[in-house]
Amino acid sequence: GKSTLLQMLCGTLNPSSGEINVRGRVAALLELGAGFNPEFTGKENVYLNSAILGLSLEEIDAAYADIEAFAEIGGFINQPVKPYSPGMSVRLAFSVAVHTKPSILVVDEALSVGDARFQAKCLDRIKQMKESGVSILFVSHDVAAVRTLCDRALWLDKGVVRALGEVFPVTAQYSEHLFDRSPEKVIDAISTDSPPEPRKAQRPINHWGSHVGIIEDAGI
Image (tube, rainbow, N blue to C red; front, side, top):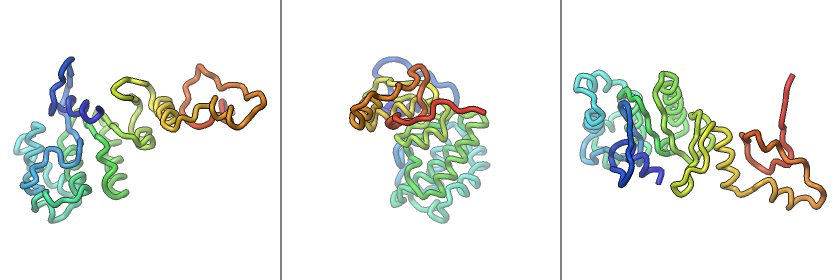
């Protein structure tokens, strides 16, 4: 359901009920190759995608050199995208998305493809865009990536909101649910003596695990 929701936010699908209000230009990285015509060259797809995002021909001409340089696919940009590898497709799609001056950048798991150096390059660019005021909507199962890029997190489970708030507590709850290792189960499994005092329930966790031994406070 996450990808379907993002497609509705980007306007490629219409909701069967309810309303979606988006303010500003949206650039999206959804499933691999989305928005690319496989018979067109990489360069032609750059112009096509940029035009769909609302850029004028003059704006695309001005941005093209930067898009080509960031994608780092060399002469393949002048060849049809049909035989592109997943990594090459992501490189080109991401480069177009970040150079079209969006107000909102939507990323759906796409950065999991490609080499580590390019992934780091993409994360750095997203951080720069975030600092400049661009809204980042990032969907991923990778807790570390979510914590790196996001200030707030939404945990969806079968279309139902399970948690919404600061990124560390929400991702900790998600991880704990994923591995189903609640503190009570762990304590029961390892000890028949009186369990240790429970952690402060009113304070949100920003970690996950057994909670048998945790640092609750630290100070100087």
